[in-house]
Image (cartoon, rainbow over all chains, first blue to last red):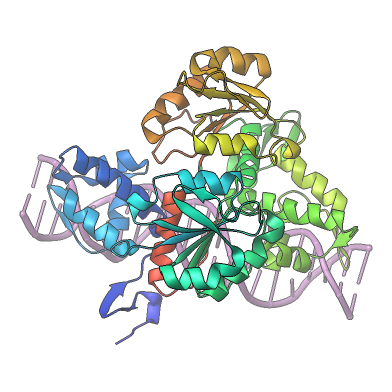
Length: 229
Length: 229
DNA sequence: CCCTGTGAAGCAGTTCACAGCG
DNA sequence: CGCTGTGAACTGCTTCACAGGG
């Protein structure tokens, strides 16, 4: 029952779910944001054209993307906003909360800890960790900073599934190893270095210096070019 | 002399430069990082295989990418590290400093202002801006926070070329408009919203909530999948 | 007649595999 | 003989264009 041929279908839990292309996955959060906005405006239905406008893409792409989730639209009308929002959330796996631990309590780590937008979107920050005795014991946003050695216990006790690395590059690989060993299931890193993790642990990278350098290229060329999802 | 057919060549300053594919551009900063490391280790030459290892990609991709910059390698030997570093920097337009203004002095804006890694990489932070009277006048890292109304004057006086938006989503479009009007030449936004800017202003987006949602998808699928450059 | 869903065409990026230079 | 540079094959993504349901 677990077909993989043509990598089109495979088993997820008990349900047989269509595989979604990477490019589409990276746009789903944008659609989700637009749908949340539409809900708050009391819009009941939305056309692919309108959703495309809100998401900053073209309508054909919206329809193709949504078609990977199933055929939820109504011809001549559009999509039911609330229903589509629920489907997008489910496809992204947002029906389950994913508790987060942040490792590295420098400026960036502290800013992330203070930022309220995570919990409200299903990613509650439940743990803060640092290696420095100066930082351990600090209370940030109601959470006491733990020592990195306490990571396995902390991940286990709080059911952490996502690790955020906001340490200097020099410490990042060690931290990544520790996170994986502790049982974290996916990692977001801000450290400007390449990290090695097992294939079973999805990893995403955010690097401001890299982004600025890319901008530098296109700016030098006289503009004309956007990127990122 | 300004060929555009096949979008392969076009004029940059006085030099005729090869056009570089978007995917390659987004990897150049990674190669750069690896090359900087190799220089600091005193390595004189590097093979595509070694560079690939450091950058976390495969060797064929490295060679193809570098071939867009010119043919700088030596068969049977590899690439001259220092020379290649200079070429990559030039391709990215890093030979000219790009002064940065940060708009939005909340947690993230302050963390960015404190982060030292910009100036050292050719992106000195020369201005900080906020709309709130609480923030205006604060001194952060030796720079006084200016009011947003002072943006045009500030951009002009300090030769700002890059704007970083670290405001809430609700203010972001206004800020983007103000930055463009003030003459900023490219924009990096952290606000979780779609921004409209002229084609002549390259724009890149960083959104942590989006990244977490993408991770959620792949984690739910039982790992196996990385992204981002 | 409007708007979705989707084959099919077109395009961009990746990987292969090897010719050719040092 | 090692390692680059690159056509060519391949894979995946985007865009087109239209059939067909409401």
